[in-house]
Image (cartoon, rainbow, N blue to C red; front, side, top):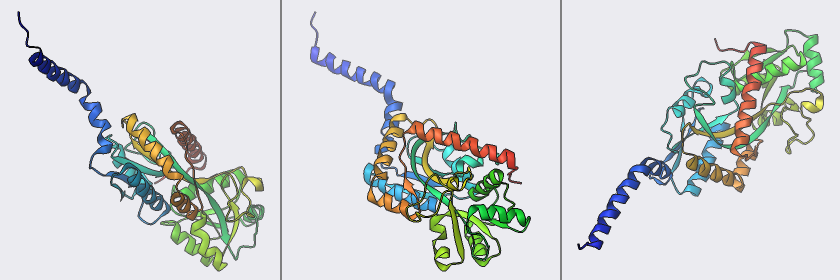
Length: 329
């Protein structure tokens, strides 16, 4: 019996190739998504122009250069970031859609009924950076330290007003934690954003506020507000003489931070590559400069470390919400 080896070998190879393709088509398709012509979208769930937008766009530029693909930012503001977050939670888990989050992401679950699970609906990709907040007062307020502010507020109940960027905003949570730990008598006034609150602070209509150092710079230079303390874990290089809250005896630490998430189910090979490239980008001088402009520092972490930070922050703010009654009506 004669056997045509070349012909059978060709048939065997075709059959083997078909079998292998059937078994690996889906993983291979997913693994190659990062090499496709489709742009990666970074959803920033806040309006253009703020610190979240700046961080998102800077990271998009860096990832685009490193991945040799188009990386674009889409601003999807609303509901304290919940609308954009929900959009990413529903996105195809192919590595082409990412979510830029900040501290408020870990606060929303305790005050909102969300259409997504902040833990189960996402996969942590990379921690990007962290920036401390600062506590400031109107120049007309006769206090020059945190202790004096606390004492003055207790001696003048109902007369010291705190300007907040809105109900359940970062500032709202932070000051309620401060009040909880110190007993300070501060009446919270809610504004539609941090900008209007600072304008009224400079005008003396409210007496206290909190935010990033970069937000406060022009008002500090004008002498219309005074800087009392850094609310983060360490002093800031730009203002080395200003103490942290913990140095003043107040056990409060609040910092704004940023990170990237992907939809749950995104292949780990894609997540790992994005993590590596994001961490490499954080070492670039441009990234350090942009973060410094926000009074912040790049802060690369492993994915488990980032996941742990998110869990700790979520638990902390949920406790604050329960104990202070923060809620969105």
